[in-house]
Image 1 (cartoon, helix red, strand yellow):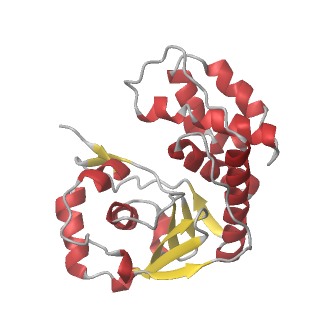
Image 2 (cartoon, helix red, strand yellow):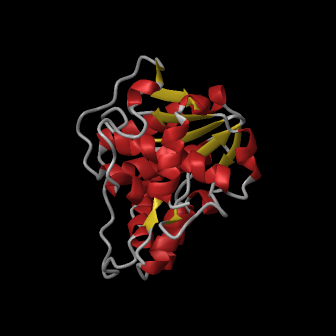
Length: 253
């Protein structure tokens, strides 16, 4: 039987008109810092998002480098170049251009782990330009500030062991604070219905899991350091009928 990751299921499942959890139900708050991002990024958005996520965990002191870039290191192994992964990791020391460039290159190996059927021969590493490095640095800085203001972080890179099913068998989330589950997006656009479903799935699966960190979670949120915005909703405001529908038809309980 074909199974899905949380992200894949949220993107491909047929949702009712407007989505299971419309963004209009969320409270929206814009964070101000007076900075604007540059226009001419030159590497894939997925790699930028992964780099911002991993480096935010590292710079905020939440994870050691080997753990923050664990998926990337596994990906380098699956691509047939484990030594290159270790080499790139050793070049990451902070938010300087050389460190961020190495982080982008290392993050690009995620795809080999998440898509095992990729051809391993001669992986092409991205070469981020000045605008890309500037934007990544600014988004990381915004994320670290966000985590400081809305934390403390109880868990980063959380899983939902015990909450996976025959339909959704993999997936890991970004951050848990004391009472809120947070998902990080770096899109140029506000969250879509697949994004709100994804974070709702994390919440539901977390409640079904053995992970005790979810016992106090009462809210779910999305943070986007590119837009410098957050969206939050009290889980009690999600209709019970929606919870049941997602449990049964999306996740498979």
